[in-house]
Length: 99
Image (cartoon, rainbow, N blue to C red; front, side):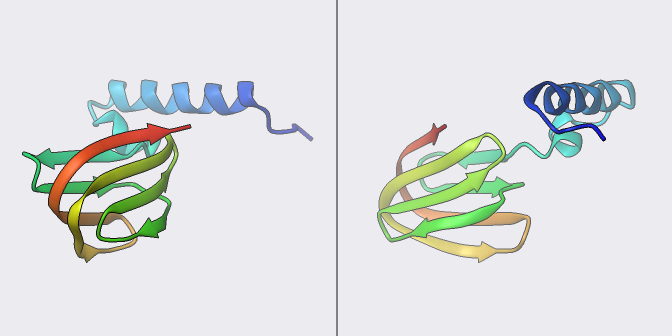
């Protein structure tokens, strides 16, 4: 039985990236990393997140495979949310990752 460890996990991620590259598929599709699209400072779309951690009009925190995604702003409002995608509108002041 192989115990999971960081090396096995990194090898798995690298293999996914190589397969995506070989098949000419966007890497984020194969590796489940978050895809973040920012439209000015008024709208942000996040795909491939794991869970919603915090939601207030000033802060949205999402758990992702790359760490905690933190969106700070004013009058932030989730316009739509599915298991795979979240659309937030408002005045976005900062977007950051915390690991």
